[in-house]
Length: 206
Image (cartoon, rainbow, N blue to C red; front, side):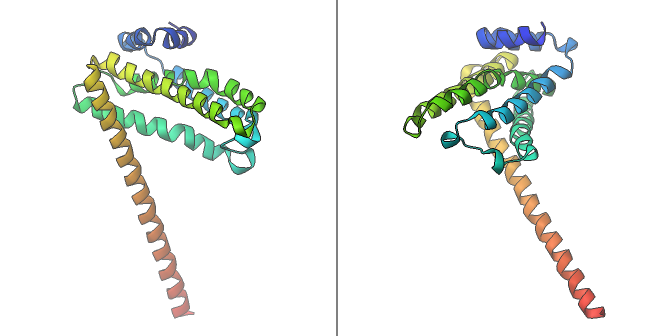
């Protein structure tokens, strides 16, 4: 199956799509998940310019390409790492690349519906913002259901175990970000300490 066939299968028969990803692991190639993630990034950039100004969550003047790339890539990378580690410990059957590929295909609803929803926002008023918010929630709920589907299908879990693995993966994601944030704070403090010592030494020997 090519990338278009997989994408259509994810929309209409998601369990089959994820089963095929697992079954064809020997023929896995690198570019499809990377292409889909890049496409999701391009869609996000386009949506920022297409959204109706009063309903927009991100304005073009308030963001940068680097920030938007971080918003797309950071959750995907931390989730796939957390999910792989959790499933590996809990007798999972999927490899990291299969998890990354499945996660990328879960973004297909985001790619398909984000720009149409952004354009739709232009005919709404601020009083009708709730409609727009509900549609966005439905879009992300669809993506979440796809994630549950691939975890269950690719690891042959029961639904109960799938939900518990998802919860543990989310906890692990939070822990990863907590560690990253702590390292960021410690690094900043260390850099400030070095700067202070350097200034003191210059004053002492000047």
